[in-house]
Figure 1 (cartoon, rainbow over the protein chains, first blue to last red):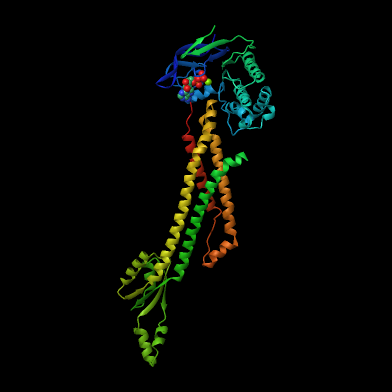
Figure 2 (cartoon, chains in turn green, purple):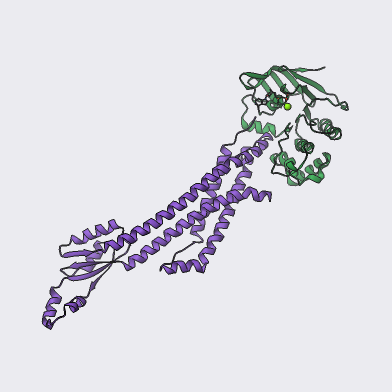
Length: 223
Length: 270
Ligand SMILES: Nc1ncnc2c1ncn2[C@@H]1O[C@H](COP(=O)(O)OP(=O)(O)O)[C@@H](O)[C@H]1O
Ligand SMILES: [Mg+2]
């Protein structure tokens, strides 16, 4: 089976004194659904940052989508990122853009046609139940609503790999279920690889999934 | 409303820069026009023992505009106390010749000194009257006026630039966030900064438009032309082609330069 991520001897750190991930080895199959858990501060977000190339490994090798991220050129990194769908823990919505424009961002970057962009955004807004907020700005929405916008943006361009950092962290049960359904849908219908950082693996999840746990700088599979 | 707020601070800064530049240009033009005016009214008087070769002198000293002999009759009339007609004729011949010299330019005191020396090199020229006292005062007054306006315009431009740099940090922060987010979704550098450059160009155009309207109004205002007419000059307050191009150029340059600062100062956050 194809591997979408291969990490060998991977170490991550923000400074020399403190390694967050220490010589981790793991690989993730293409088309799989993966939960990542771990105590707060254990390095879950840090791991995701390395996967989308915002944090360069200090040691080891990290291959994502067939591309080695150590010493990658910015042109190649941009190319890779255009095929990722990321939900950031702090959402990272553009404040001066409307909800609609925010969701459009990956479509614009990938050069989609205007008509396709619009219909795609309309359908996503419906899926995350925000069709009445399309013209509002991020700061006019609640935290949970912003999180749904971030989710819609991550799905907009049918990415090959979705990286979601606590995407239900701020949501009530009903909205959380909405998000899980979307991620499951993308996984089932489009064979998208999904990696979700979360505190609780939902009981309602119907599909096969893998579960990795981060502890003391180590990443290991929970079977 | 939101986009209005995005534009207003840079537009105001740009307009104030364009405004002080144009005011300085207008002052410079008025002073030049006024100098020309002065040059027309200003003349030297030369006393010569011989008839001057006008053509030769005009060729040699290029700043001279015209040479005109003053009739000695006035002088003689003052001495007219029982001098016979014959003696009067004799006096007319022996009396030195007086000439009024006009210049093409309004000279600086230094130019005036040189001119005087040059004229006195001719052995038959015995005296050159430059009326230098009044000339000096007028000239220095003009210079003072120009310098004051220059310092004023310069300080407005400097203060504006300082304000812009203060604002720049805020803009940098604001645009940095958007550019980082676009980068995280794989936008190439040109696309990341496109919004910023478009904003900069639009702001430059708005600032230019506002200045264009203001100065077009000034240049057609009766009150303004009356002020210039009062001191006997006519000045081009705003040349709709030449001045417009300069304004547009300055506005675009400042604005695009600022945008480039922001783009170059952009750092991706971890
Ligand atoms: N930008 C940063 N600079 C320095 N240290 C950081 C940064 N972000 C996170 N850390 C540290 O790295 C460790 C792991 O953080 P993080 O990956 O965000 O944890 P979590 O598992 O809660 O997502 C924490 O000790 C945190 O303080
Ligand atoms: Mg985290």
